[in-house]
Amino acid sequence: MGMGRGAWLAACCLMALGWVAAPAAAEQPAQPPADEAKAAAMEDILFWRMDVAVLRQTLVTEAMDLTPAEMQAFWPLYREYRLAAATIGDRVVALTTAFTDSYDNLGDEAADKLLAEFVSIEQARARLKEEYLPKFKKVVPSRKVARFYQIENKLDISVLAELSDQIPLAR
View (cartoon, rainbow, N blue to C red):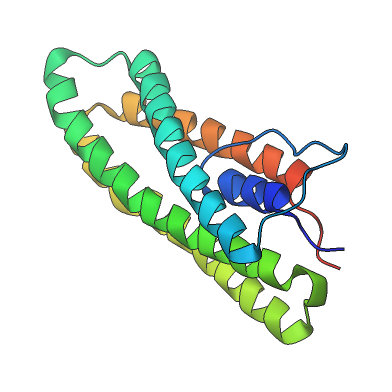
C-alpha cells in the first residue's frame, strides 16, 4: 500500500520545518493523479514553511530579550542564518519526496542513497550551527547566543518528535 497525498504532504511538511496533523484515517476522497497531488502538496509545503518561519521568528523574538542595539545586529544575521537553514530544508523536502516515491519498492541501493543524503543533511545542519556560532557571538553576548541555540534546538526537536509519529518506517 503506497503513501497517499495526505501522508506525503505530512511527511514533507514535518521534515521541512514543522508539524502537520495526521491525515484522517477514515474514508478519504478519491486521490488526484500523482503529478497533481505532488504539485498541490508542494504548494501546501511552501505556505506551511512560510507560516512556520513567522512562528519561529515570533518565538525567537519573545525569548531573546534583545536590547535595541542587539536587535539591529542580530536580526539581519538571523535572517541570513534562516535562509541558509531553508536551503537545508529544501534538501529535506527532496529527500522525503524521494522516500515517498520509492516507499512501495525501496531496495537496498535506493535506501543507501537515501541514507547517505540523510547523513549529509544532518552534517550540513551541524556545520551551519558551527559556522554561525562565532557570527552570533560577535553581535550578542554568549549567554544570549546560548539561549538562541536552545530555542532553535527545542524547535527542531519538536519537529523530530512529530516526524517519528508521521513518517512510516521503511519496509
